Each structure stands twice: as structure tokens, then as C-alpha cells.
Amino acid sequence: MANFVTIEAEARARAGKGAARATRREGKVPGVIYGAKESPSLIALDPRLVLREIHRGGWRSRLYEIAVDGAKTRALIRDVQFHPVNETPIHIDFQRLAAGEEVRVAVAIHVINDGVSPGLKRGGVLNVVRHAVDVYCDPEKVPEYFEADLGTLDINDNIRWSDLKGTEHCRPTIVDRDFVILTVAAPTKAAEVAETAEAAAPAAAPAKGAAPAKGAAPAKPAAAKPAAGGGKKG
Image 1: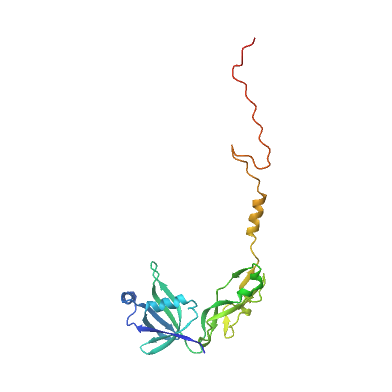
Image 2: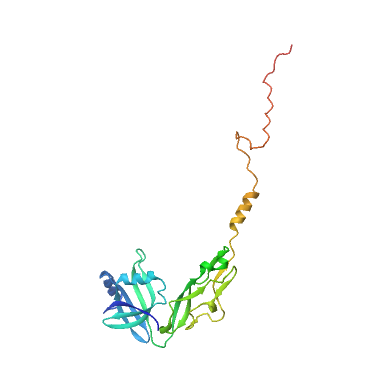
């Protein structure tokens, strides 16, 4: 049985930009619930509830029960629009869920056992190709995340879709290959290359007037120039 998060909302009577602006002036976030072959439902939510869910992460696959006047509607968050300046939420879209009808969701990847990975212990670099995977699931069986177990991964090893845990009730939108989720890459050689280049660079000439390097032969004095207009001949 899937877990649903309940959030409270109020019904809105009117649609349109003017009605949405009026809802925002009242300190609420206008929203809509659509889908499942039903008419859209107009709602208004507390902006603190919207921000709480967005900041929790994984909200694209989280299941919700939206309570409006005692009635509850199961839905997924499909889109959140933000103000371009202060980044507060200004509109939210929910997709209504219908029993037995698959939905497309983006399920986050949760990495485990990275601290015991042989490759990472030897200096390997974790390269995450996909932070989430788009899948089709029954609304009652949408997982909160998929697990990627790094416990046995060495350098140049990877985890693919078939290696993930928690995918039993889902099918990926990519069907033509067993796609890569993450890899453990070899350690970077940039530092070694920089050290080699520095060692191979020729030593710079000392500045004029500077003391000679330790062990270097002292510079020979320049020959004196003859005085101008030499002495009288006897």
C-alpha cells in the first residue's frame, strides 16, 4: 500500500488570471487538479505547505491526498511556477490519480553503501548519470525512491537500471537498453600532470642584481673601459 501525504486546500470559485491574482493577494497559492477524465478542480493552498513539499525533495513522485471541504483527491504534483524575482510559488498543478491507471513519474535515485565501495576507497570518482528515472507505475505502488547499492563497485564499474532496487512495480520509459544510472570513474590525473609540467619547466634567469644561486660560480667582472682622450705622449 502506497503512502499518501495529506495537504489541506480551499476551493476556488473562479478561473482566470484576475481570479488567480486575487487569490495571491489573499496570501494563497492558486492551483488546479486535472485528469482522470474529470473536470478540473480549482484550489488555493497555503504557500508554506507548497514550499515544505518542494524543499523535501522527491516531490515529483510523492503521492498526495488533497483535502478540500472534507473530500480527498489523490494526486501528483506536476508543475510549480515561481515568481521570477522573489522565487515564491505562484501556481501549482496536480494530476488526479485514477485507480488502475498507470501514471508517469520521475523517481529519485538514493545511493547506499558509498562508504564501503572499493573503487571510491581507492580514489575513484562517483559519476551520477541520472539523479531520477522516468517510469510508469500504478498510483498505489509508486516508490519514494530507487536504491543504487555501491557496496561492491570498483573503479570502472557501473549500476544500470536492472541493478536498482525497488523497481518491481515500475517499468521505465526507456525500453531499448539497460541504461546506466551511475559509474565509478578512475581518479583524475590532473594533479600529477601539473606536477610533471612544473618539474620539467626550465629555471628562470635571476633578476638583475640578484645574488647567484647556491653553488653557482660568481659572475666575472666586466673589463674596464679606457678613459676618453688618453694621456699625452712623451
